Image 1: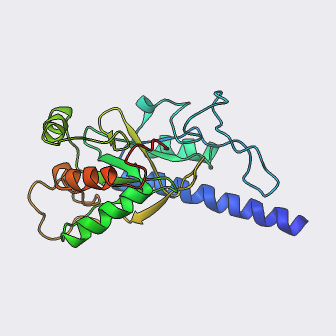
Image 2: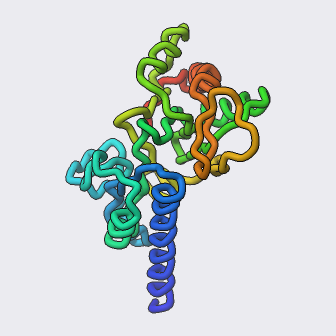
Length: 236
């Protein structure tokens, strides 16, 4: 029993270190503002059945996967603050505050996400980082304004409600976080910008390359519309 408990503690420490390292990479190397998520109750052991959100809402719709204390406005690239947060809360999810100079994102149900990536790969389009949870995938894109997004959406015949947009004032959960629906991972890992950049691409010299939202939107709309659930699933 002691050996099992000791193994769980070591795994917990390694998981906490991984989240701290990921948060520091985002904040200091890529200049992406981050903030800890609410996280989950309990330790995650086999006997731990209480894995709801650590926030006060017993019916939280997105367990663990949202800002709580501190709020989203506290997101920062300051290494000292990031280190303090995850040293005191090593199991906290890593949340990227989207918009401004940071990446934006589009997210859709996992089945539709896999279909969209296959289509974009078939078209030869270079993709940026793709975040995957068991229920939803999020494609990170270069920062966009609400005005630009509005123009792109206006050109679409119909946009399914399951396709979500994470711009200014939004956020995305990053790996290696754990949330209510399961483990968060990279479906496509970030790649630093090197060589010639495609037209309209935006990336800082040391930050991961990001495609333009206009290059991926149509494929995501089509994949969401043709998903088995009709593009209506709203599971986070």
